[in-house]
Image (cartoon, rainbow, N blue to C red; front, side):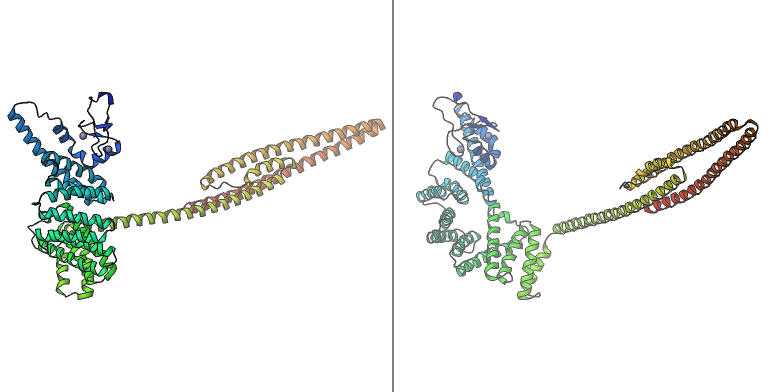
Length: 552
Ligand SMILES: [Zn+2]
Ligand SMILES: [Zn+2]
């Protein structure tokens, strides 16, 4: 938003000064191009303080060339400029006031400065019309604790006031009030009280001793007494402040066709609220939260909130006041009843708001209940999952054990050579089961596959064994018969032939017996396998049932 100034393009003898501090400018506003700044900081402060709202107008005003055109045209143009400047003075003063009430003194300075600048252009230096702008600058610098600068502006204002004996009492009162605040801030309490007494005097001359304009003087005097520890004097002055405001506000509340803004500016309302709040706090602290004077301050604050449309605040303060009045004066007391009536007078908007609040509260409760329910559900699911997992682990363990037992039995039943294969097949089963219950079906399949594989392997080996045994028996019988026949041949032919025949017969019988035994063994094994299969099926069925139960 800023435009860097090129020093080479600046006309000779021409100097651009910062809008805020007057130092040599390096930047220009890129929108109006007629406002200059020494730094980005000062540009920002000016922008948010006032320039944002007057940039366009300033651009138009500052680029007007009063020397061109006819005399008539020039006069008309001057009139337009003057009217614009008057409007700008008011605008700047209002903006500065608003910032001050909001406690943004930094942002009040640009508006106050601009209003002084326009006032000087319109009225000329040393004129009484400059005093409001001086006072604004003094006040904003007071807020920033720049007491020296504040004092300088007050001295300018004082000089203008002294030079103009016709100066209004109101302006004098404002001047003395600011001097009073300055001296109070500097710890010069006697000087402060003297200035504030002058403020009260001129305010009373202007509006009367019981007027809200005069109340501010009492309030700042009370502040000085309080700072010095003179609580009694402070409380006495606060009584006066609350009394004046209470009367004003009650009158206003009973005239519904009138608005508080008919009498007070936004800044004055803000000041009044701050004063009453401060009185309330001081009374609470020094008199007690349940003192009737504290209740009065609550009531006054409630009414000002009521008439300015802050209904929720008003409701709060009315309720506090009713509580105090009821405990001190009784529920039937006329004053208590008056506050109850005022509370009931509040427009229905807050009730809608209350309903909204209630609805929001309900929604919040529902959300919380839902969250609680979800959490409980999650916890239950977690517990169930843990239980199922434990169950599955147990089942897997059982299954593995059963499987191992079966395999061991099979291994035992089969020849010793197959035991290594059985061990190898059983090994993965006996290792720790997977923790995830979702893997159970996989595990089951794995087991089944292993079983099948193992059975196949066992069958093959048995077949081989049987064949081997038969072959061995045959070979043995053949060899034996051959040997014996050879022996017999060596011993004697006739005898030997007969003997050999008999031996050969025995050998064949032996071989037959062997084959029979093997066949018997095979038959036994077949029975065993059948029984094992039955046991395994039962086991599987049990496991499946358990799994289903766990899943449920
Ligand atoms: Zn500057
Ligand atoms: Zn601009």
